[in-house]
Image (tube, rainbow over all chains, first blue to last red; front, side):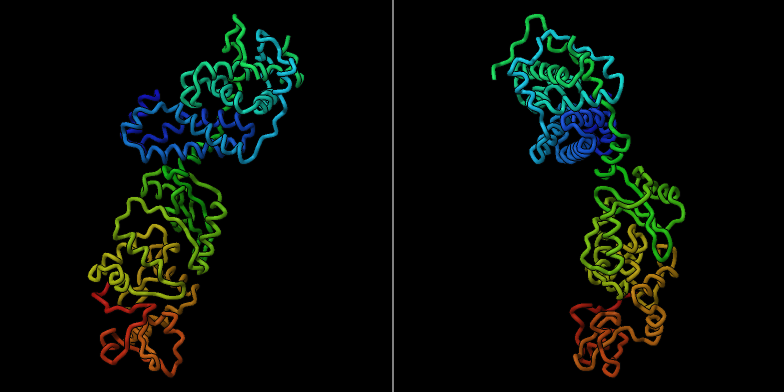
Length: 192
Length: 272
């Protein structure tokens, strides 16, 4: 069921169709939370909290407001806000990638980033996840939304309230920092 | 920091292969947790009690049912049919809820246990809320609840509402007895269980019924000239030599006694 149809059904019968929303979006919410926060336990709490808050919000909305929602971006906004609140409460240990970039360790923009073989193993996927979680939040969140959850830049702009151009630049910078971090962490495959 | 510049022939979307593989699926129970927390599904778990295994159903809004059953799947199926929500079996209640129920059953009056009473009538909820006021170790007749909620003639409806109490023990409908003073029926496995539970709370159900049969429906103190329900904490403090039983509030008033402000004895309506 596409989100427009789902929004229409939620507007008509919230309790009867919220379960469809949960099953359609729980993986998206969890993936965003997991890669922004960097650990499964917090991600589960945030994803659950986000969907429960979504239900409570929808309970108070007029049907027309529910129909007009872009559900995926709206849910991503709730997840991102909860991740940020949590981040403020307990700052993540962040490796100083900024330094790495500014001292020229950033690889050139055309460096290949084709680690399909790399992520064939879950363990290495989690290493990549850890590098991603260590990016500064300003870059990490756009990269997660764009490349982990595959939202469009138009949707990113809705979620983060920044212009698309800014977001493209932040994603680009984020990927570059990630490549640099990957090289530093011994992911030789990433930097031919 | 300088604004990052995109290389001319580098598109920013050409790197995501590895990153999209980071979108792992959510743990299976996460969707269920959300549905339970929002009250769109329930969980049900066993809880040991003196009258057998209780199956307690709950969701994010509160406890929705207490049932007496040997078989969890059967209890869950009944609950699902009654409330229309998917009911998932769990091995145990969440710690804080199990603790709150244990403390409530042990007689702590101020333990808060949220209840999910969606779909119940205003009258039923009023009856159950009033039953919550009856302290452990005391009983009141159906007619008292009817009078207290402002529906003195609805004695029979009070009995029906108590029979439909979805959360027995938590809402202590076992502390409500027939207007004629006999212990009466009980939804949670029959009258024998009502006796067991009341005895466990420190009452002597047989003695209560005997007193009622002798016409001792109210108990007054000859020194204070105050008349109580016989199980009221004030009535139980009256010394044997000062005890004055009455058949009705009218008799007590005629003899110059006033009703206790704690247990508020009422004139009793038709038998229920």
